Length: 407
Image (cartoon, rainbow, N blue to C red):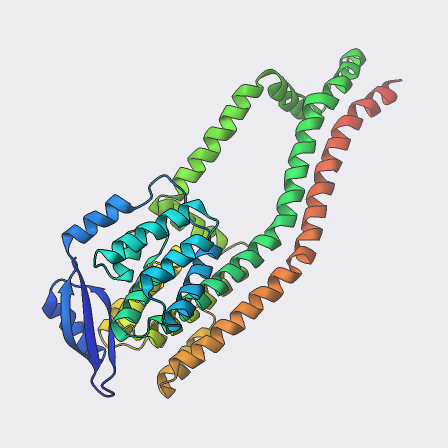
């Protein structure tokens, strides 16, 4: 479906808003806006040449820009614009400040694009791998409404919250990852260098070895005699898993797994609810319509089950159904508090304020969970390590006990 950029006025308050929306035609777009309580004042279809520009300038195969760089860019750009600095000069100044060479190149091209007559939003949209749809659409709304500096402040705040959440979860995962990596390394060292020295003793004993010992011996021989084959197998396996997870089926499988792992599912649900509430409130505050807001968030959240819920919500809201009623249908991924807060926001007309409080609540919850995560994971890791060491010890000692019994 074609995408249209529009400006519209609220029927009740007369406030102007703007944004982009996919629709079958201009008539369908106008009907959708009227259902949301807006009268369109201008509608413009996205041009094909703009789409081709996006393909030409996108950075395929060249990585991406760190989230922190984009956060600083949005925050400082808003401050510079509010100080009266022209847009091109502000971007030029930020280019000089950035230490990321890729981002410097991107900002240089942004300046050239703006000088040729493109808006900031259109220029940012040329780099979909760097500036996501949320970033671009909020900037577009800010340009249409004349409140770009305010919108950039909202974008920067959202990026800061995203960065904080990701850092907390990543930090909580470092400890168990290091322990598991160390266990894996020690196991390989034992099987390839230490165990072969013990195997000679077993051969001299000429006793029937237990199944556990035979299994360890076979793994040891495999690692020593076919090490290249084993490495190739693991590389192929990891590549296959990575490729599968990028497919639609793979994303759905992974989304299901993380929602059913104890402790992890709690973090996933609260992180997604926090992001959903904050982005929803931010977009509403920027003047984006409810339907378009749900469409943007649907493409921003990574868990497939949340995407399904928001897609359903988008369809139902277009029919005039309240979003809180749709949320109530997905009790497995939206805790009761989310429904209640959305309901309160709809009834009081203060959705932005209520949902920002909801986002702060879940962000604090995630903070507490990640702080306590090490104390939860520690006993599990100890059990795994103890089980592995115990199994290895029993497998090595059983043949010796057999020999002693025969004597």
